Length: 326
Image 1 (cartoon, rainbow, N blue to C red):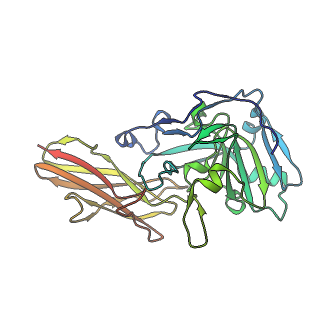
Image 2: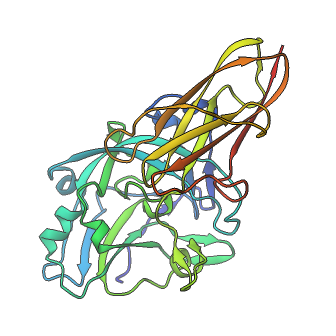
Image 3: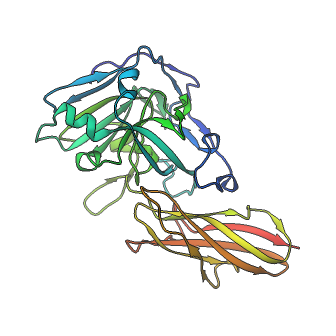
C-alpha cells in the first residue's frame, strides 16, 4: 500500500460516545443518538486533499475526489449499524446499535469501473485513522470483505447519514457500509479500496475481530441475532396495571420470533413482531403486560430465520431490564 495522506487525529486516543437504550425508540435513529466507537481516535480529514483510490487486482485503477464521489449516482439504504463490542472482550455485551439511513455510491459501481481481475477474492477497505489500540500501534485501519458480498447492490461507499454529510466522528468524508455486517467492517475515513487474493495482515483482521471455528478463526462479519427493550427504561418506576414493553430485534437474517418474560425468565410470552422492512432494518416488537405491584425483571430473546436464538451467555445474551411497579 502506498503512503496515506497526513491527517490529524483529534482526539488521538480511543473514543466512545454511547447512548442509553431508551434513546433508541425512533425507527430511524437520530444522528446525535448513533453511537461512536473510534479505536484510535477521530481522524480530522482535509476534504480538499482527500482522495479515494481503487487499486490492486484491477485493470483500471482510479481515484476520486469528494466532488467526484458525490456526483456519482447515489443509492439510499436504511439498515442497522451495530458495534461488535471490545474485541479484547468479545463475550461482554455492549448493545450499541442504531437504525440509520445511508446515502452513497454502490461499491459495485466503483468495482465495475475498475474492472476486477479474476484472481481477486477480497476487497480491502483502508481508513485514514492511525494510532495505538490494545497496546499495538497501527498506521492504518484495514478490514476486508468478500468480493461476492462487495458486488451486491446494497453495499455502499456512503457519504451521508440521515440525509446530511457524515460528521468527522461518523467517518467524513466517506465510509464503507455493508448491511448485515458488524460496524467493525464499516470502515470510516475511507481512503483506499484494494482488490486482493488474500486477507490483509492487520491488527483488526488477523489478530482482532475473529471468531473461533473448527477450521480456524473466522472474521467477524454477519450480525448475531439480537433484541433490546427500549421501553420501559432500565430502573424505571411504573404505575401498576396495563403496560407495554417495546423494543427492537435484528439479525443478519430476518427475525422470526421474539419472546418476553416478566418474571425473570421463569415463563415466556410471544411478543407481537413486525416484519423486516427493505434492507437490513431492525424489527419492532411489543407486548401488552398487566403489571402487578413490586419489582420485575423483564427478559427478551429473539430467534432468527436461521434458527439462531439469543443465548444466556455471550455478547448477544438475553437482554434484561429491571423495573418497579408502584
